[in-house]
Length: 368
Ligand SMILES: Cc1cc2nc3c(=O)[nH]c(=O)nc-3n(C[C@H](O)[C@H](O)[C@H](O)COP(=O)(O)O)c2cc1C
Image (spheres, rainbow, N blue to C red):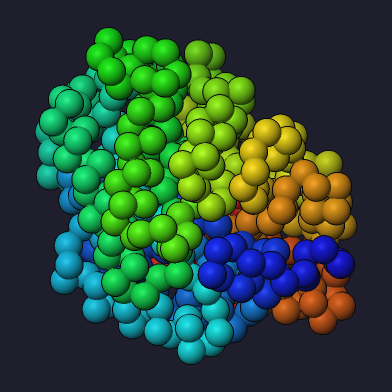
């Protein structure tokens, strides 16, 4: 695995290899969004495992935009000390850590968020979105964008090394980009420049809050995999514009809760030809943009990873589920044991986080 273990730089960050830990909802925060000791330990373990860059799971930028239980909060200044303890623990183990910031939009859980209806670009519902939905007003959109900026400022204060904007998997910013979900007739809906406006303004708010030297990333759907949803060409255009504005890295994903078969977390990745299921999308993105591209989704074996990197389909590879089962997977591969990741992509890890048991591998736990 020659290329995977190259040292690289993103702005001021020196990464020891080309592996990223993709944002993974840990389910280890309390009702206020405060992270627990176990949350810190989990990331310490990942740092000890020599992952080039860790991206902590999606944190909500506003209490009324929380999507899932036990989700990390970044909506208030009093959350900074807990997160500073996290970044200190990761840095002690020579790790680099970013955090993903998100708003649920139509995927907001109304009960957890204390709202009557989930609010998004339009009052649309689809499988996996809230049943009761409503359209955001323009002042509300402005307020959310400002909160993305404030949360980004908190990430920097808390010692994170970078921040990632979540514009994938059917959450708010992905909803704005989708012609199927975004039916607005004002300046935030309609043609692509309008549908992308909320994403551009969020980027600007984040960049304004963290300054020019701080790495800002985005995780974005290249394709929604639903009739009428976001298409690859539009996604590439949006990212190209963001890169011109100063975006430092794009993580290429796709799909949403409306179509689990073609969703972000596909099951049963048990053969090389099932791996890297967005590689074509990453390649198309990489051809058109100047910033580094990371590919996520079903990467399991060193041979496939090396092929993706050496054929320049992506500059980085992001993994999520394999690290739940094997936090030290990169060290194992670096040590010469090139057996594919042990993760069987069963998605039972989701059940554990949803139930408040915290992120771990259900299969591994049964074996122990
Ligand atoms: C338990 C769990 C939680 C996840 N949480 C997030 C998240 O917070 N943000 C995000 O962008 N993706 C999230 N994902 C998706 C992963 O980051 C990744 O895109 C997906 O699992 C495909 O990669 P993999 O095959 O390496 O797991 C989550 C996935 C799992 C299994």
